[in-house]
Length: 619
Image (cartoon, rainbow, N blue to C red; front, side):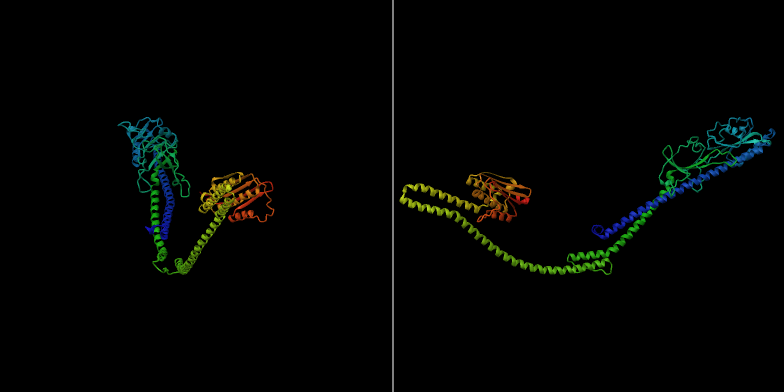
């Protein structure tokens, strides 16, 4: 199954592509050729039916014309046989005609008064026929007409109106005038003709006999004269139907004579018509011969040809797909072997690529892979050598860094000890020195003025308490980093409270929740800058109100310190004063922007702006 997966095999992809293309082209060719063949076969069938209709109309017209000519010839013979003494011989003439034309059911001769003088069947003699169509028309000239069929009127003589075989398919009556030597009409000779083969017309141009094809005779108004009993003497009810292009010619031209029609029972048939003419001298009644076939019969052979073309195309497509698959496997076999060799080298199962012989793309690709593999191995060896050297140097550098780290830790410890020593010197040592001076003073005072000892003892106790507080503050600062532990907001708040307690200056402090959480190493610098600014306010500004604001806006932190003191000129030189210089240096150290807005008698505004990442505001 892996070899058939186009996602894993180029040969499989090529095979499936060939199979898909073969199937698509075979189906498309089958549909296209099938449509052309179906149209051609259908057109041939329609033309064949049209030819059969013309042939049937011609045969039937010739038969009727011959029989009408025979009646007219008998009329000319009877022009000399009209005397009463010779009427008995007419029956012999009628007998010869019925022997020559078995389709004649009867032959009769009527006088100008409309009375049958003689007939092939003696039972018709003496019958009055003045109301008959054939008589009235025959008095004017040769006539050919159709009468409907009906059951026999009795067990006796045949019905002169409907023929001797009224239950069979009746074609019609023939009549012709009988004239004397002067050209006057002295009677009418008539015959009745029955065409029993007309309804299904088994005599086709081909040798097949198909009862599905029906034959009709229609008059000029479209009424069925000859056909099935349920349609006889009724108008033809077919309506022209729109069918697909198979009813068209191969070039899309409409077939002229035949047309597809839909019957009232929703059956669709192919109808072909041709004019029926009984001779050049006879009366042309406008009759039409019609042949009809079911539409399934018309397209039956076309569908069979279409299916044959489809199966042949599919078989050819399958054969082409098989040949294409075999060819694809043969053409991609070299590429598959190269891929297997590359996979083997990649899994360290082989050392060298298998280079196929030849000069095609596969051989060129194999040689290129071999060169790349050689270069990669050389580079791998060089990288291994460099890696070993790098590891050696890293080990040396690691030992050096460890040594420097140890020295750095020792230096940090020394610096911390020095800081502790300075803090103790600045706090506890000064306090102890002041307390020692107070004790010495108490000893001298006790010796010379004992009454003042109590007051000095109180002062000594206050000095001791102050020193103890300073010692505890120093120890707390060594143990706790207020900014890192509590955030910049809390540290500034405590510093501002101590400033207010120490100086008695009124003021207010505010910090939003986000900026109050800021507490990295830059926060310690901001705290020292705030302490320096508050010391300057305490020493120089003579302010009565101080405001401290700590705010954040997006990725920006802003510290504002504002007082209502005497202010100063920032451009004036200040020898031996380094407070402002220190503020600017600390701002540059953390990448902050320092802005000092002041003027004499207008107070001072200090704003420190620092860009901070959002993660620095985390609690």
